Length: 273
Length: 192
Image 1 (cartoon, each protein chain N blue to C red):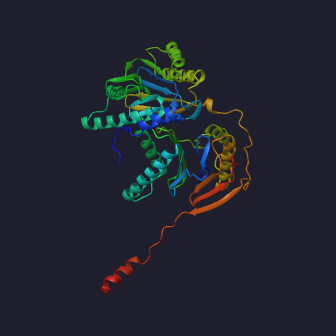
Image 2: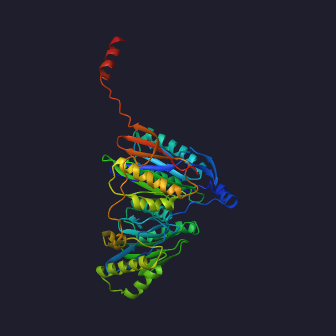
Image 3: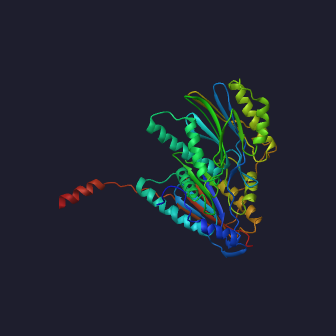
């Protein structure tokens, strides 16, 4: 069985396949993305779009980009989908173990340090750009983490391919005295701006509002982009038998054998001995 | 593709090295247990290696847990195996289809070569013809199809996409999984 950690066994073979044999490598799923975070008076709002692309094709039109690190610390991720999923998953479990062993609820700062140390070890090869936000006993915090391991702490952040579009909206609308509703609507507009203007972002809007000891996740709060106008009213009907079959094999589920009278036989055998 | 309490996986059976066809009967869709089907496309050597690797892991799971693995757990297992080779990956795109839980709810999962999962409710596609497959599935798919109709729809999708892809074809197989068992049908495809 394999040990933990990354396994580099196939690296040599892959390099030769790509260089000598011109092998066409399957594409990784990227989350082109617009992710946004904003701090308001009582907490933090995180927002993300829901499109995952594989080259120019949309692999998943409704994926979840806001990941749970702990109950009140959440993280939106852009970059390679597998990397953001697994990085946030790994740090989430490290943080859980840490909080159990220290007996204290986790801090956003701790998650930040774990994430940046992890990503720096791999020098940017793990392509995960993250917006980390949460509320702990010291108050609300919002940080951005780049794939190489550098971080910034800011009152409003946007990352991903749609970050320019989103930042334009944030710069216009942000004020340090915002309340919850203003912050939610600002994040919503910023994500929408990314969805409309950036080709790598699309789908629905996800929002996550974190306050002291409270977290609300609004999955697909805005689905105006997913309602297709010109869908054919009458679906295609294929009559049974329209596909020509060469061979047919039916494997029925194996029925469990019923064991009846086993006990009686066993007792009889003992008596004979 | 998912239907009403049933799922189906369809694939072609050509094995080639770039433009040369080597075999016409390579099977890439495997039964994991009565509730889970697992298909892979990509580098054939990796498909065979992973087939053996998952067979081994599932045998161990059955012995240790004394029960069959659920499709969702198996999908996570696949993703973890693929991500452990993040820098030096297996060149495959897997698809997992199964029926989950007491109510036999359809479960579909596709991952990329390093294990980024997605769980759509309708259909998943993979392979050299995936762009054509995506288009044709998007058009023909309906919700809540019965097994017979599901078979017709998935077959027509595969046949249409295979016609437009030079590297696919030479025979195809469709497995329809319901709570009563698996029906496997071989279709007549173009031999070019």
